[in-house]
Image (cartoon, rainbow, N blue to C red):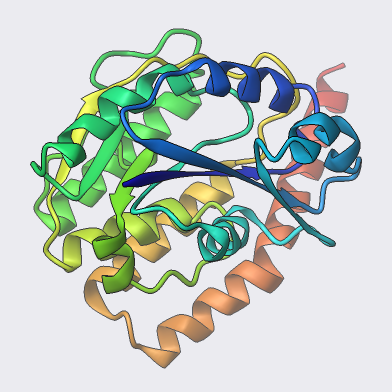
Length: 263
C-alpha cells in the first residue's frame, strides 16, 4: 500500500521547506509519495524546492495562475498513485507527526475516512473568531447531516481510494472542506476523528475570511438539500464570482472609514 500526501501551496515560501523537513523525518507504516502543487505562487517554488525536486523526494506540479485550494487538491489527486490520501496544508499549522496516528485506523480496516480534529479541546493561539466560526460550521453540519463531528473544517482529512471512486469533487477554493465532508457522509462513509496538534501560523497571512465561511454554509445546504438544483448553482455562481469580491472590498472600506473617523 502507498500513502499519497497532497500539499497545495500558495505563497508559502516561509513555511514549505520547514514543513517538508519535518515530513521527511516522520516514519510511516507504509510507503509514501509527496506531491506539492504550486498554485500560481508569486514567487516560483521551483527555486525554493530545487533540491527536493532534483532528488525526486517530491512530485512537483506548478499551476501558472492561482486557482484555489480545491483546484490544487484535485490536480494533486490526478498525479497521486497511492491507495490512501491525505491533504497537508503548506502553512505548517498541522504537524506531519500526527499522520501515522491518523493513518492507523484505515490500515486496521476500521474506517475509510479519518479527520484530525483540532477542536476536541480549545486550540492554543487560535483566534476567537476563527475558533467560533469553526465550531458554528461544525454544529450546523451535525444538525443537517445527523453527525457528531467536532471539526468539519479541519485541514487533515485522510481517505481511501474507495472513497475517491465514489465522490466527484468540483469546488475551487476553501469550500473544498464542506464539499468533501458532505459527499463522504452522503455516500455512507463513517468519519473517525482523532485529536491532533495545532498551532496558528507563525509566518505569512491567513487566506481564509468570513466570506469563505458563508460560502461553506452555502455548500453544506446545497449538497444536503438540492445538489442538482440549477437555480441554486446559479445563485452560487453569482455570489462566488461577482458578489464575494465586492462585499469583501466594501467591508474593508467601511472598516477603514470607521477607523479613520475614530482617529
